[in-house]
Length: 247
Image (cartoon, rainbow, N blue to C red; front, side):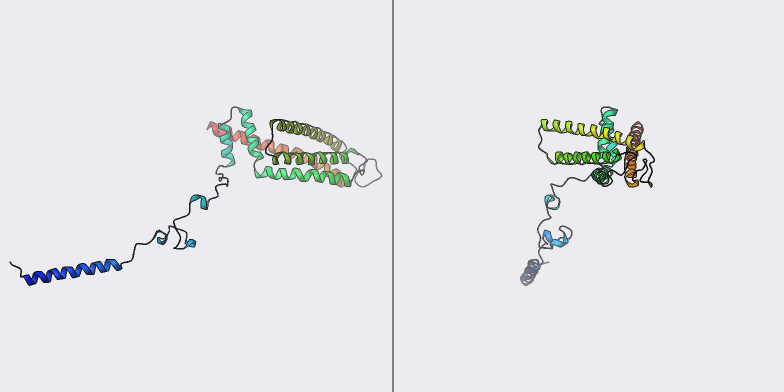
């Protein structure tokens, strides 16, 4: 069927109009959203005008230490795997325990106790005729305890040490520890051998100030209790780790 020239011209004009209309619609359609306008790509507090999301270094402090995901029991098992023998394993377990919060509290107590020893021994000096060396034990032991803690603090604070300085510090600490252990044993003898003194009659040859004596008595007794408790805990960790490794 033939198509007239007028119909062809009308169809061509109609197609041109539709094309122009489509082009106009495309020209006025909104542009695609920017990256910042896409929900969830940037924090809401930064607003839509922000650029790309922050880098890892911007949101995380690179100098901060990484979080610890291992439990104490897991660290004990790891120490068991990496130990060359039982003594090496026991040494690593002790080091792990010294890094716990409880041991940090104990380290804080080791600073308070020597100062308390000095104060009690000085305040009640000469008020224990049954054993005059009990105040002396408290004063001398507290003084050397404070000196040891102060020297240890400065040794940990000073990071750049030579091998000779480390050797000197270790020798000094060994001497102080040996003296404190010997002095502790001496204090136990002075304290326990007069148990229990007279607290009321100050004219009695068996008199000793109650506060002074009870402080010295519970000081040496609590030391045995703490050492025994820590020994039991260490043995429990060792046994549990060995049993777990066998299983």
